[in-house]
Amino acid sequence: MSYKIKIVEDRRTLSDFLRVPDLIYRNDPNWIPPIRKMVGRTLDIRKNPYFARASRELFVCYKNKYAVGRTAVFINPRYHVSDSNRLALFGYFECIHDSEAAGYLFQAMEDYCMKQNITLLEGPFNPNHYSEIGFKIDSFNTSPVYFQAYNPDYYNSLLKEHGFTIYKTLHTRRNDTIAEYVRNRYGEKFASAGTNRFTVRTLRMNNLTDELERVREVFNDAFSGNWRFLPVSREEYHFAAKHLRYVTFPELIVIVEDRGVPVGVLQCVLDINPLLKQLNGTIGPAKYIKYIRGMKKIDTLIIYAVGIKKAYKGTAVFDCLVRALAGMVLNFKKLETTWMSDDNLPALAASRKFGLVPDKHFAMYQKAIG
Image (cartoon, rainbow, N blue to C red; front, side, top):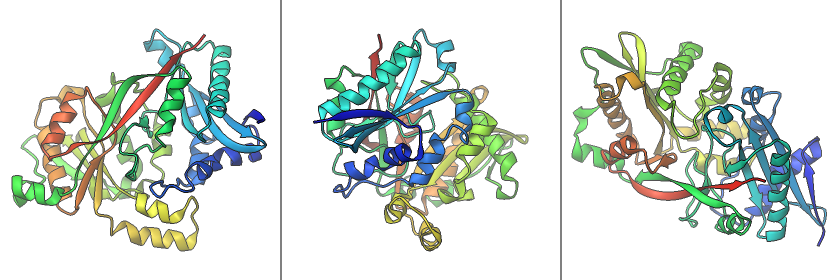
């Protein structure tokens, strides 16, 4: 067998990079094809503001001239300030069930990292905190909801075989009868209410630029100090939120304010994966119209992010957000979460208020370099 690694430097190799998943999952009924154009947009160093302060390298593995694997390495120097290691992240790993092909990809990543004086490689991140994270380690016979990672079971074996070890586990949670659960436990009148001090409102689409700044401000404060979180710049957040209207509705984003100042945010999104599956990696005018109509029929809600400014931890802001979520879920059949850290005790306690039970589990891997 002949193997070769190429760095993505032109349209041909980029096209091969983007199409590798089609080979891996072509017979997998649970796979949700991403919009290839959107993946390319995220990885474009000229368009994505994340790369104003970070770098990336993309690799494709060819076996007998056919692209059979890919991976990416991201280096953000801001991690080096707060970590004793010089850290690099890897992501977008896809590979056929072939240990040699995987080995060539891992070696390419390590060689690149050594040239950049990196001492620790970990992932998968795609490419930052607001990304699909981890390799799934159970529930392989189920489809992911939006923003959940998905992979074959053998990926975990390939990483362990080539010297990677699990250093952190994550999980998602779900409740398949959420409206019924909330009605039975809290009643219809529990939903959204402010206090004498705090007001609760939904996102204002007529002033979206300023609204996104309010949300970003809260999340940057709330998540500072969290595992692997880096403050998001204005440009980064607006870039990521460009297609916000295609994954959620304004009433699914709640802002709690203290005398007009945003102090807490609940951001939920729709499980658009059934719609993405129908698009099959591309979108055009006819598909777009069908997609927009389909959004109104989605019955699964996803808690994307919840943040409370540190100065307001332990205040009534938490209760305001819980009540707001209770009001939202009355219109949905199922409630799911994106990835959660196993040691995030406040989030775990909050999830139990809504009967959310552990569902899928994910592993983060790392390997010392050099």
